[in-house]
Image (cartoon, rainbow, N blue to C red; front, side, top):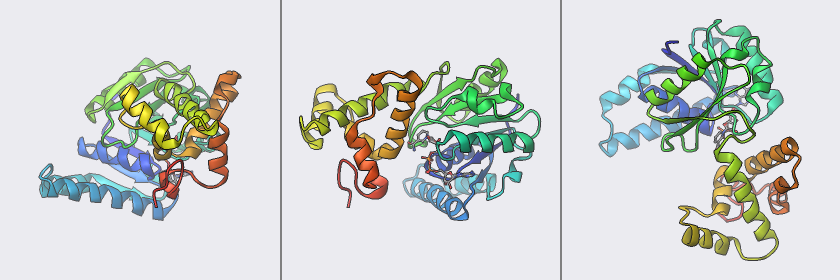
Amino acid sequence: MAINKIGVLGAGTMGAGIAQVCVEAGYTVVLVDIEQSMVDQGLKGIFKNWDKAVSKGKKTEEDVGKFKGLLTSATDNSNFKDCDIVIEAIIENIDIKKKVMKGLDELCKADTILATNTSALSITEIAASTNRPDKVVGMHFFNPVTAMKLVEVIPGAETSEAVVNTVVELSNNIRKEPVPVQESPGFIVNRVLIPYINEAAILYQEGAASAEEIDKAMKLGANMPMGPLALADLIGIDVCLMIMNYFWNEFGDSKYRPALSLKQKERAGHLGRKTGKGFFDYN
Ligand code: NAD
């Protein structure tokens, strides 16, 4: 399956990064969001990254000119009609993702691959909302997309081997390291990482140590580049909580019970870096 034109749906944190790395690898990309303001913000971030790369001598003006020629944007999904793959990176909500995938299925050409960047949701369930479950696949990038090498490639129950192979090849072409993983809540990284963050949040709520002390201990004692609570703030406390709740519902095992401190911070609107405050204060 040849990939020439890539659609990216959602111009937020992940979608903009995915569009950028695909364009830099020479693919024609259309970046779509429901909100014009998000499209503008996504493009602004991409252009800023390119300006920075030029000023550091990592890219030339000519490179950037070429990239800009490969990238278009829109607020209408009809722009995906001639895409060979559409990578969905919208809000992590199963009902919205299913509705959006159904719409893409009706709109895209018959052989278009529909990939989802979901952090934890079931690929099989998302695929079942379409008439092409064999062409729906998980393509899980990491934040920030431009820096993080990993892409987890997750087939649903009916995803064809050819589609998995195509997405593995595409991941290599955009200079990422694909790791195929069978479907399971949270795949590999979030299955290990989010309960780890949750455990740190439980320690914090027990008053065992301060946020600073917990993070310091994990950096110095486990050689983590960043402490678990600073990482929660970076990912977004709402995102961590949503994934933890998903594990709890899916596995029905109390070891996945979400930490009260995560719930309290979400209820208070302290979602981490994006709101200026979480376990740490960024103001
Ligand atoms: P974000 O909130 O930054 O961006 C989401 C974008 O989707 C917004 O611009 C929003 O306007 C748009 N959107 C919402 N509904 C839409 C619709 N129906 N049609 C078109 N656009 C729509 O979110 P994000 O952090 O980029 O996350 C996107 C996806 O990537 C989620 O599934 C998330 O779980 C996953 N993910 C996030 C991270 C992370 O660290 N942020 C890492 C890996 C995967």
